[in-house]
Image (tube, rainbow, N blue to C red; front, side):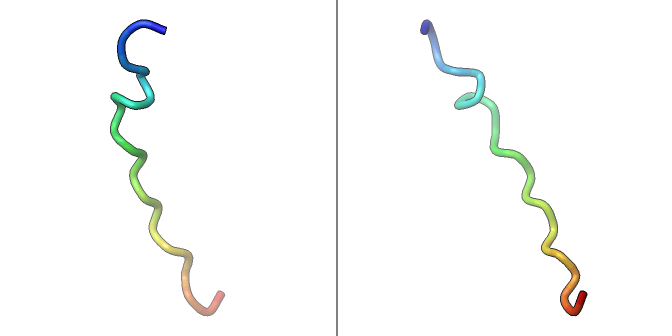
Length: 23
């Protein structure tokens, strides 16, 4: 393990919009 992990360096995934209310 050399250097920082690609996951730690990569930004967090975009949050998905909440599900429609009253489905």
